[in-house]
Length: 121
Image (cartoon, rainbow, N blue to C red; front, side, top):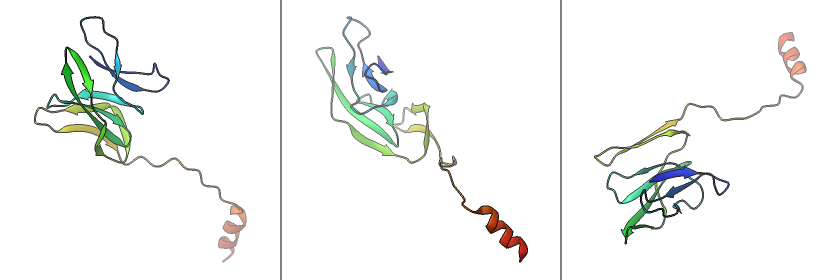
């Protein structure tokens, strides 16, 4: 079973056998959300904005052995963490909003005098 938990204080990805009562093993190392099994069945994919991370794994003696994380894809934008889906043909769908405006604050000093100067012309 693949799941996301904040038991370490930040959102991380874990895997746990459904049978046998074994404890969950942390897969991600620096945060992660929306984990899925890859279509090949040999990797776990999850979001760590702005990247999709892949972790290869093997199963030895009924236990999953995770490999080293690598960046599978990088997409700038605001991720919808509820949309990460793997298709049987190996493609992966992720929803990214590239139209959202960046959060910023603009302070205009002496705006009254500038507007007044433009109106007098």
